[in-house]
Image 1 (cartoon, rainbow, N blue to C red):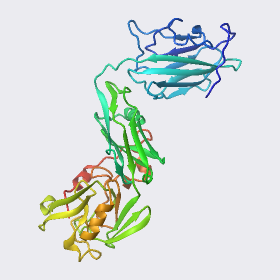
Image 2 (cartoon, rainbow, N blue to C red):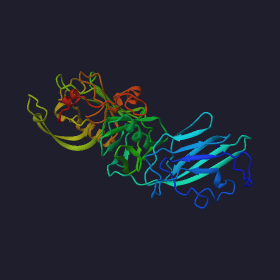
Image 3 (tube, rainbow, N blue to C red):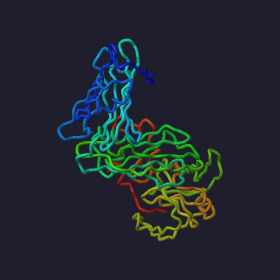
Image 4 (cartoon, rainbow, N blue to C red):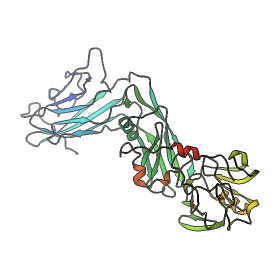
Length: 417
């Protein structure tokens, strides 16, 4: 709540007394060192601090920040932030008697706290406090590495966050997740999902907007996460999205339809996995454009022998599912499924597809006899979880994270054609 600051004489009847407790304390309890003393509208004796322990000059970041009203007035608003602009979340009692922080303070940081008050006569006032916190007492640091790399991607590209230390406790996960910030222009709703103890994925409710700019950063540095663990550094990330491109393969109809910004731009006769090697159903994200790839029957344990150099290869799973040129099966394309799991097409169509798609574009398979693409562990199957299920993987929403099961891992296969 914004308040108008009113200068008053030094002698005021019924002034508001604030006690700001940092538990470990802040230095300078006297009027000479009080950072508020220079304020003409706020007498030094209106505010008192808990004195720090002997020899300490800084507040303990392990302790919460607390503001207590100690007269007949009330607190109307409290804002606290550090020098880098990170705000401290807090709760204000309904009667305005007390405010306390609900998010941890950062270590080795400088804070400014602004307290708006109202005395028994309704006159507004403001108290401004500055203090520093000490360094963490532990060397265990949690660093974060964001992905993908800076560049331009399709609208299906998830954001990834790799942690240098495992985080299992749900409360600690909430601290980490709250500090990981993702924004886009145009804006869109999104959420983090814990894949496992050291990895998170972020995706919007729907695909990213086309021609968007996505910015990712961490506010975790210096923040206490748990016993002996503090937030470390993270390099911010910015990437953009291109046009919305979705390739839908109907395995039963043996045809791929490519949409650009929701309009059909090409229909391609294809062949997909034969019985026993059925192509996975569901949404996949282009992982890489690998060009020329050697694919062998030995890599997947196929009974029938093959050893082929395959061109215009676009990878869509870690286990080796591709969209690629298959000139040997042109007679079956559009009529039958004869591959070992990949989506094959003519060399001309494969060259066009290879030149058209980029990492992060969507490749969706429907009406196949294969299993559903796993959400995690075999590439980016994130979009195969509906929004409600996705949100259960957030420590800020609730639920249990969905990681790959042993059955999921067992289904992962090397290159197939």
